[in-house]
Length: 183
Image 1 (tube, rainbow, N blue to C red):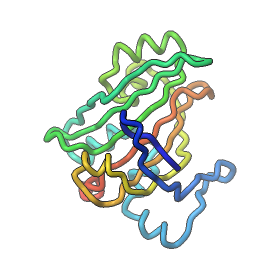
Image 2 (image 1 turned 45 degrees about the horizontal axis):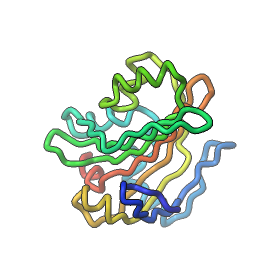
Image 3 (image 1 turned 180 degrees about the vertical axis):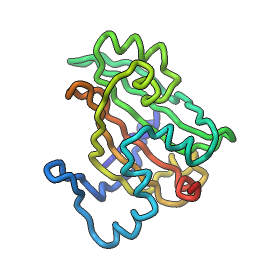
Image 4 (image 1 turned 30 degrees about the horizontal axis):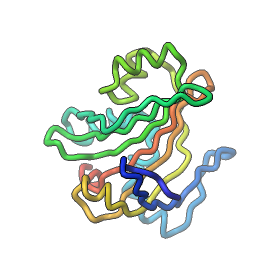
């Protein structure tokens, strides 16, 4: 799988090591993957607010830094957003890229709150959403390793958020190897 992570159109390679089975709610797994996943399960499979979980792990507020935000008009309105979540010491903990499938009323609300994490925006406007974790990534990224200040492999996941059973946003999240040492 190739995922574009920066504005220079350079691609970093991530391998999808797990695809969640939607029919039975279990994931396909192998023994080597399970041993690597043990420490990462809480982060990778959490369906709660990622920002709230980070706050719990670090005990500090989490900062949101917008890297890039563009609006693209396709068949439907779609907005691409790239952000970094960091701790109070400015250490980058998560890179997230989201593709929003927005209705006009939500576009205005999201633009007013574009410096806030997705979960916080949805909570503020009392949007009852469901989250579906679709893929788990594992790989190396020159780009992410530079910002995470680590040479260790990077874990990530792809999630889809639904509002009233309609797709609202697709999110690719990549986690700093440092996160595992916070708990």
